[in-house]
Image (cartoon, rainbow, N blue to C red; front, side):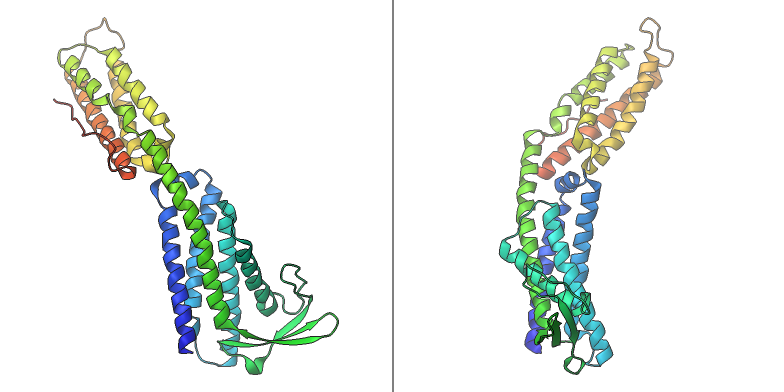
Length: 329
């Protein structure tokens, strides 16, 4: 019993490490945004991770689930095999969703776990034949006198009336299920790790800072012109075009760009107010002080945008970005 408990504990711990690695990969800033393009896919991946965690927790507690009283043993047994079914099915689903192919051997092991579950707690009274596992159609039942939380004898009758008695170790199948799931997630994590590296290389090849490299320069020119009482419409147009190009970058529309969008929304209002003030270049400004305030506010937001772009670039490439040059008053 002690050895079986230890085997289950070790298998569960190993799977938890792989699950944590999967969560790290999925929650990576670029991968989360990549998967988030398909909301249904992202939701399924999150559901799979939760189900893997939940069933791992359940199976890890299998040896400590109570005494050998028959009623409790039935509940534990049915719950354990259903947890195994959910676990291996979730791992098969996430592989299919993410385009990860498992080996034929691993697929066959998943089928065997699902096959036993059908005969024990799925459709024991009338299970169908299964060409993959060689199972013949028939009926089965757990021998109550042999039942304990660690295992039982399974009596099976085929359609031609033959009877077969098989010893089933619930603990052994729990260990097998946990190990199968770990191998599945290892395949998935290896594939996702490669994809994360690819996404990081794509970002580094086209950093966000490229959009805004001249932004602080033009904001400085804008402030200088406003202080002299001029209406630098052309400079304002250059700043606006730069911000429009930045907003059009698909990375700004994703989860990583939330902070950027916040500052961009503020620049929209400042630009609108300055445009209104300079709508007639021949008309002298009615409120030069307010124009200076709006110009200064626009420059502050642009500085924050440049800083945010550099921070995101550095998050995926420590060598990316340049020092932020603040606009002088």
